Image (cartoon, rainbow, N blue to C red):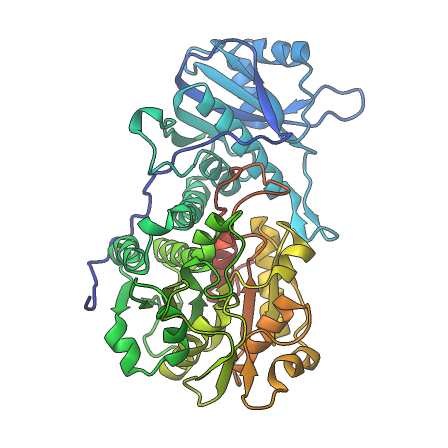
Amino acid sequence: MKHMNRNTVRSFLSLRSVARLINVRYACETTTAGAGGKGVVVGIYLKEGDKDPKFTPSGEKLNDRTSGKLRQLICETKVDGRLGRGRVFNNIDPDFSSVAVVGVGIEGIGFNELEMLDEGMENVRVAAGVGARSLQEQGCHIIAVDGMDYAEQAAEGSSLAVWRFSDNMNKKNRMITPRLELYDSADMDGWTRGIFKAESQNLARRLSDAPANCMTPTMFAQATVDALCPCGITVEVRTMDWIEMQRMHAFLMIAKGSCEPPVLLEISYCGTAPEDKPILFVGKGITFNSGGINLRPCKGMDEYRGSMSAAAAIIGMMRCIAALSLPINVTCVIPLCENMPSGMSVKPGDVVTMLNARSMAIRDVDKAGVVVMADPLIYGQTTYKPRLVVDVAALGMGVKKAYGGGASGIFSNSHYVWKQFQRAGSLTGDRLWRMPLWQYYKKQVSDETGYDLSNDGRGNASSCLAAAILHELVPCADWAHIDTRGTGLLTKFGLVPYLTARYMTGRPTRTLVQFVYQMACPEIK
């Protein structure tokens, strides 16, 4: 495949998403049979003391339209404004067949420093998501969503909540895809930004959730071209011959075990002067990771179709920053391959020389992520001379055991970069937390005899060791490594109410977008 580019198109809304109900403690109960048609989601704040629960301004207007009937029903059904709890009422308003009233929690709540989370924004995402999904179950084809003072976050929560991966389902069994609208608010700019961000995460979810036979390296490359080129982003698709010419032997050592040919993507977005140094993103793109010769357990192996979830998140991020027309240059290098066992597979203990002339021993083929990313990471730095390097990958089980699904792990040699990511996560609700990048771990991966680095190191700190290996490949630039092993794959534990159980999360797409926004517009708070 040759260089592919298409004319700039700034439109981003591709509402192909469909939805699924999640089994969590947040829910809306229905009082009467659903009637389909058009529905509306409005918020209600948590009752304080002996006072009745307070509607949001939009909810109060809707109550006035129904001559107080909505408040009467709220009192009868004892909806008290607890976050994510509510009811769906049918046939009480001539314009809406169903009305979902959902608790938004405490009115006026803001940033919680202990949680490192803007709870006001996150509560709106939860309320909008729970309400939209409940109306979707009622068969509503159009859903108007109360902005609840945070139109952008309401758009994110509702759009994420009504999505599910159904590409392989019979059309008659697919749940309807409701059209989302902003209700009774003038903040259309915020709503549109929220839709952009949510749809970028939904794109990452769709790429990650596709079966491995439907998302091979070549198919992923084609999906990337289809998603990004209409937005004015340049996508270079590098094939096997080019990879061999560049002498990316570490990448090829893993790729040669599969019949599927490897692909390397170079993606460029130019939002400012071409001579300005870009931010470089490198994403792990193993479209199926069986563990190679070090085969992983069969139970749950299907989850590792999402080993390229980090690459998918970067693709979603690029689409969103193009839609938002952010004034910044961003470049991505994404290696795509499969890690499979065969007679051609790399064997435990094999040694390969990387582009920087250092050698690496592949002692554990299951830990192929750092091997696949090594040469592209070096290539991206030498080719683009970036101002900042960020690599994203689902690597070590250590971060999953430490954080579960609560946060992605981040390692950085720059306190400023870490603080920017911390702030981005606190605003998006998709948080990151810093883990140590100490000389102690570097010695565990580099203090070897017979070769310079090992791909597994010594000891149990798998995530820290993987980060130490990657840091060895970034000699001088500001750098951050994000490990999404606990957050980027299937949603299993501690479910986020506006995401869908047992499907890929698409995380941390929105946090990456927010980070790039902060780097592009540092003066805007």
